[in-house]
Length: 483
Ligand code: NAD
View (cartoon, rainbow, N blue to C red):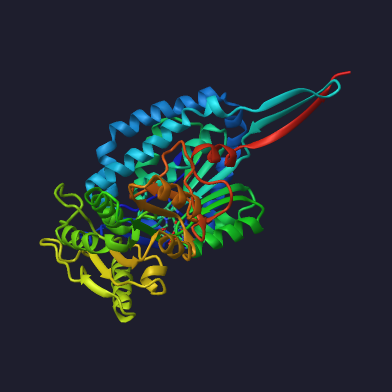
């Protein structure tokens, strides 16, 4: 019997009010491992009512007491670490080590939330005018929600939930229907904390539940992570409904390599960036911009190393790359590879026909490299979200910066070099929100905001770090005169 997932509302697991369920598929085995309800707007409303009811008491709970829950939460997460890893692998298809990295990053956001009592402070100026004092106090605002993607099903909701609730808000997560099981286990642990009912809620579903979150009059703020078209929709819809919104979108990340770079270290980093999580990371390197004579040695080594990667079931420790998320994703990715060829790129490594023994139905795409890519080709401009590397050659550093800045995305960009001058220029001039210098995946840690510009981010306050504190609190101004 395949388990039908229940929503978690007001401290209880409750059946969704729908008969429509989407199968959750293990992309390596093609087994159905769960049934995810397509919760209607009425279920989102129930979660909002529970969260709204919980808010007044929760915000009056001292911030130190709110933070205490996070210590216990962390202990439970550590206890169940490998169980969560297995669930991430089963529903997402990444390798165990990649899932371990994801769960670790998720826990780091809980660590950050334990610091909220230290940083959730206001400020005061005496005698701002004669006999008048002025204070700015931070206050929570009410019910917040997150709409999250398939590719980091455990980590991404954790960017938001712990900070939001320790700040005194109540919360709803609406995960991706492709990967809902990771949040189910996280909420089982949240349930063990005995938080007041309604502080945290979970609603499974697709577009209808997302729309209900964006439009609900009693949700004050929404954090979204996913593709750019949906990020735009979320930004516009939430703004129309008077909400705070931070919407992190898709990406097209460039990695430039100078001739003076340490070639061995650069190649190792690029491999991890492009093929980690089978390229399904918003920080995945996608276009390798080889500057001048870096091109020949870099290309030769990348083709050699990529061709040797062990593709396999994520649950097997020896696998170095797992599946992509679904048959539809594989079709889209192989279609983009073909489009690259049709537009004139040279296919120097073709992963389209990769087969993994014992997992013949799995949605694998092997490491792929398209060489001689030009800036106007689709494969250089649009997000592939799969294990596909595009290589282009440019004459010099300025040409590399130009090509990167032509992108309508601005999530991440990296430079490999031994030159401090070029490193500084790169950081200064490149219009992307996360910059790596001799680092292939410039992933912000929990105490820093996750950058993003242009079509990769809509809003002003980013996820994580002090931006999250700003997003989840309002500064109320008090002006006092005592006669
Ligand atoms: P997606 O946009 O398809 O889905 C994200 C969420 O939005 C899911 O919960 C989904 O149910 C919901 N959704 C999808 N279509 C919707 C619609 N039309 N109306 C309302 N809700 C809708 O994204 P995905 O495929 O799950 O994730 C991959 C994308 O996420 C990639 O583009 C990747 O770059 C991006 N991503 C970005 C970041 C970042 O920090 N910028 C991080 C991770 C992933």
